[in-house]
Length: 368
Image 1: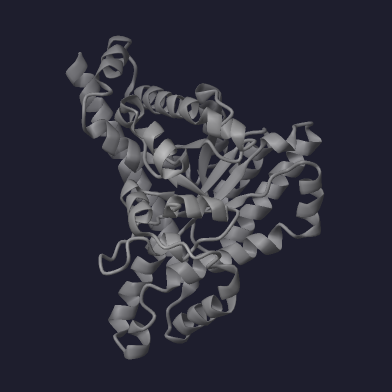
Image 2: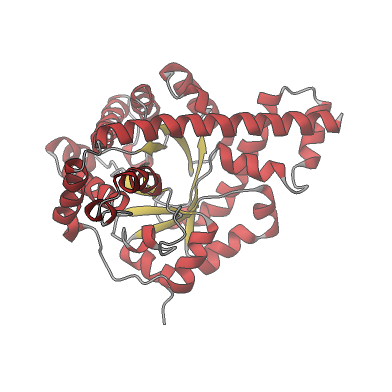
């Protein structure tokens, strides 16, 4: 009997863990998830690092060294987080080699405060890439308007990118365009396109959280019948966008030159509503050529009782459009919701980044 995580992998879904800590690296927990749960990559963000640094003693020795060296808080955060990503990348290197670079990836995010500054994002993306110095690292860049330019230039430099905070179909198309533009520049500069990879992180549960709040405020039977359906519908249509854009003549030319598709990655896949099945955003978005990045709780729920019944996406585009049309008919603005979620997403990461700085600042002070 195969496990649900084996079934997902067999379908073509790459399972990435949405968590990282030095304790997880040092204890062997990360390797165990590779061995037992079919995990083939890791994503990080400022919230994850803030949580990791706030508990346990795994960072104490390095913090003491950084304090003795007189490092600033920002320098210390840079050293600590890139060390974790490099160590995790080494653990995943066999996966990276076995999948020709498609998986075995460990993502690290540029400072969220740079989300609306393309030049600063490009500069830090290059710094992070050079510091981690592992071919299986990925630099996370938010899909803001300014981020689009940064995506193109970072890809053009031959650096693999995880585009984060995508909420709308329109922005997803723009992200794919930015990726293809970057590949065209990389090709002109003589880079080997086969070594450049990217994923487009499409957020799921946050869409339901915001829209469900509005449906509850309307309160009619029609409105309530649409609860917890928007996130999956939106993501399914994002996969349709992926299929359309990567079958274009422009994309085909690049793919024939050795380029890789920019796979959709389902992010924010832990359910926020406890009344929902805990595997909802895994089982309902099962389809090949995707990544699902899961918090450990969602991963364990999937392994324990997830039911994987093949492709749940490509046959459901019509139903997904009907769902979004019904929301529009109720006066819920798709554009307003997705713009709000992007704004809040950046703001939440900035808050987490500041918490990370505060945690490290206190640790440096205590180590003096």
